[in-house]
Amino acid sequence: MKELVLKQHIKVYETVEELSDIDRQLLQRAKEALNDSYSPYSNFKVGAALLLKNGEIIGGSNQENASYPLCLCAERVAISAADAMFNGIPILAIAVTVKNPKQVIKEPASPCGACRQVMCETEMKHRQNMRVLLQGEIGEIYEFESAKGLLPLSFDGSYLD
Ligand code: THU
Image 1 (cartoon, rainbow, N blue to C red):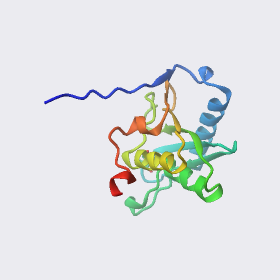
Image 2: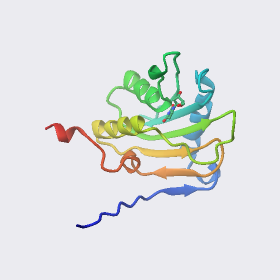
Image 3: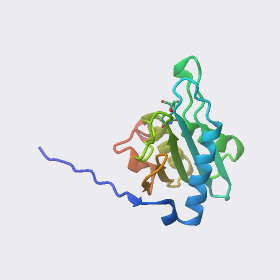
Image 4: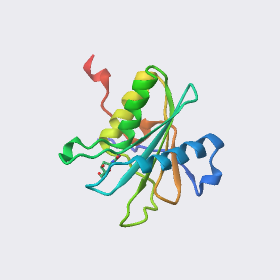
């Protein structure tokens, strides 16, 4: 028997002021996207924003449905919007933030497993690592160099060859 220890490198910023101009702008766009959230069932708003290689910034927010399984996460709404509008243009970074009316979330937003899987597929598709910036409503910002950092041992298309 042997043991594997998986390590993860995360940059932690105490405030948005520590971010580069473009990352601050990206996180700000994610926060603005919270206003477009349609979340009458959970009242939990999620905002995402993508930085594309052509300089475009695309926002997205969670879109819920009375038929709960049809709810769309902000991350995948943003990625699908980018695919629809700028198909083939790699995504350099994604910022994700959340807002819960019941409590101020101080921990970095945590993308769900399905979104992590889609983010990894998006990286593979574009052959481009996507930096991931996560912030709660307030508090520290986590930066991952790649979506793969959020999904160790991930499943991908190579298994299907
Ligand atoms: N949600 C997202 O938008 N992204 C995630 O990664 C986690 C969950 C949304 C889905 C639903 O509208 C609400 O948050 C509560 O689960």
